[in-house]
Image 1 (cartoon, rainbow, N blue to C red):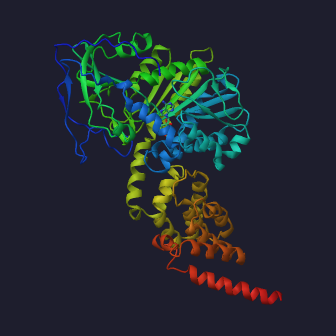
Image 2 (image 1 turned 60 degrees about the vertical axis):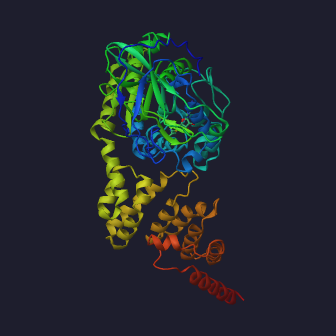
Image 3 (image 1 turned 90 degrees about the vertical axis):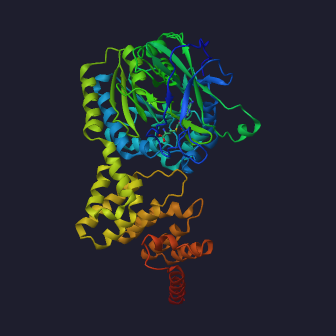
Amino acid sequence: MPPQQALPVKPDAGPGADACCHREVAGKRPRQPYRTTQDGSPRVQAMTQAGGADPSAVRLSQSRLWLETQSYYAEQGHQAWASGAIPFYLTNTPYLAAAYAELIAAWWHPAAGPGPYRILELGAGSGRFAYLLLQELAARFTSPTAWCYIASDGSQRTLDFLRAHPQLAPQFAAGQLELARTSPDRTGPIELQISGQMLAPGPAPVVVIANYVFDSLPQDCFVVRDGRLYECLLVEAPLTTANRQAPTPLPPRFELHQVAWNYYQDADLDLVLGRYRNGPDNRAILLPCMALRWLRQLRTQLGERLLLLVADKGYGEGQVGEVGAPTIEQHTPACASMMVNFDAIGTYVAAAGGTTLAWLPPAAPLGTVAYALDAGPHGDDRRREGLRQAFANAFIRRAPMDLFALVEQASRNPLALSLPALIGLLRLTRYDPTLFSNCFTTLLQGARQAPAVMRRDLLDCVREVWQRFYPIGANEPLAVQCGALLLEFGAPAEAAAILADAAAGPPPNPPAMFLLGRCLAAVGDKRAAHKHIAGALAIEPACEDYLCAVGILPHRMAQEEAAQLGWEIALDGLDRA
Ligand SMILES: C[S@@+](CC[C@H](N)C(=O)[O-])C[C@H]1O[C@@H](n2cnc3c(N)ncnc32)[C@H](O)[C@@H]1O
C-alpha cells in the first residue's frame, strides 16, 4: 500500500451531514451490513460533524478493516468459497464467461496487432471463472499459442489450490494458463509462477479482469456540501487482544472533517475527486483510491493498451453516492466489502484517453463495466465499435440480471416450471450447473415421463452442464445428479466416468459410491459393483437417504443389491469351476 498522505484535517463550523438513515445496498449475498445491532436490526447512525478530532478516527482506506479482509483471503484460500462464507455465484456463471469471451473477441480483432494475447485476471479466487472463460476462449481462438490466461491473486494459498486443481491441469500443460501473485502493493514486473518468466509489456493489447475485487480494496469516502469537501473518517473501536483474535466489528461511526480539494496531492486522484466539486451534495461518495492506483500501476506493468472488465456491485454516472453513511458489508467478522464507484474509475480512464461502457441497472446486485484504454496506433474505430456492439449484445440487450432473477425464482420453486421451460432456462444461462443442481428433482421427474425427443434434449443438457462444472472442495451434489440422470437415460458407462472421482473423494462420498456400483453392475462389472456398494454401506449404512430424498431411488435398496451381487458373483464362480 502506498504511504499515507498527510491529511489536512480542518474541523469546520459549516453544515455537516445530517443524521443518515440506514440503507442496505443490494450487493453480494449475504447482506450483512456493518451497521447492524447484535440482533441484526438496522441501526440508524449519524455521520457527525467533528467538533474535535476523535483520536481513533482514521481514513477509511487506512482502516484495519482492509488488512483483516486481505489476511482473511490469504489464510482461508479456497475455503473462503467452499465454506459458503463469501458469495461468488454471480461472478462465476457460464453466462458471464461467454459474455466476456464476446468482448475479448471484439477487442482482439486482427487490427489489434500481433499476439500473443494475454488475459490477466486479478483476484481470481476459486478459479471457477477462469475455468469457464478458458472453455469459451478455446472455442473461439483455436491457435493454442495465440493467447495465455494468467490467473492471479494476492493469496498464495489460493494460487496453490488452482495449481493443484485437476480440471486446470490440461491448460497448465498446454502453456495456456499461468499463475501470478498480484496485488496493488506488488510493484515491479509480474512473475509467472509456472514458467518462471516475467510478464513484460508486449505489442498486443492486454485484457484485465477484476470480478468482485475492487469492492474488497481500500477506499476513501467524502461528502460535498456547497462546494466544500469533507472527508468521512471512520471511528474505529480500540484494538484489544480480544478483538485482534476475533475481530468483531462494532457499528462504525463516521466523522466529517473538512479537507482541501487537492487532498491526495496526486494529480490523477485529485482529478477524479475534483469531478464531484459540484456534488451530488450530502451523499457519501466513495473514492476507490486503491483500485485507481492499481490500474495506474498495471498500465506500467502491462502497457498502455488495456481492456479492463469489471463485474461488481456499484454505481456509475448519475448514480453516485449513498444517502447516509457508506455501507460496509461484512461477509464474516474478518472480511468486508463496499460498493464500487465505477464513475470515478471512468473519470480516470477518460483522462487517459479511454472509453467506458457500463451496464449498471439501478439496485441490481451486480453491474458490469468495460474500460478500454487504447491510446496506441492500433486503437482504431473498428475495434471500438466492435467492442461497443459486443457489450450492448451481452449486457444491455440481453439484461442478464433479468435472467438471474428467473434463475433465483426457479431455484426457489423448481416445481413451478415445466421440463421444457427448465431446459430452455438452462440453455439461456449457458448450462449453469447451479441452476441444474437446484432444479434437479424437477428434471429427474420430468425425464421419467418425457417423450424421447425431450429426453434427448435433457441428455444434451446434462453433458453441457457437466462440462462446465468446476468443483471447489465444497460438498456439491452435481456428480451424483448428473450420474443419476445418465443412468436413467441408459448411459451407465458415461455415468460411471462422472461418478468415479466423486466416489473416490476425498472425502469419501457413499451416495456416489452406491450409484457408481449400480452403474458398474449395469455394464456387467459385478465385482467392482459389489465393492463399491458394500464399501458405501460400510462407511455409511444410511447412505441412500439422500438418493431417496431427491427421488433417484424409490426406496432403500443398497443391502438388497449388495446381497444380490454377492450371490451372482458366487454363481459365476461356480460356472468357472
Ligand atoms: C471477493 S473475492 C472474488 C474472487 C473471484 N474474483 C470471484 O468473483 O469469485 C476477492 C478476491 O480478491 C483477492 N484480494 C483481496 N484483496 C486483495 C489485495 N489487496 N490484493 C490482491 N488480491 C486481493 C482475494 O484473495 C480474493 O481472491
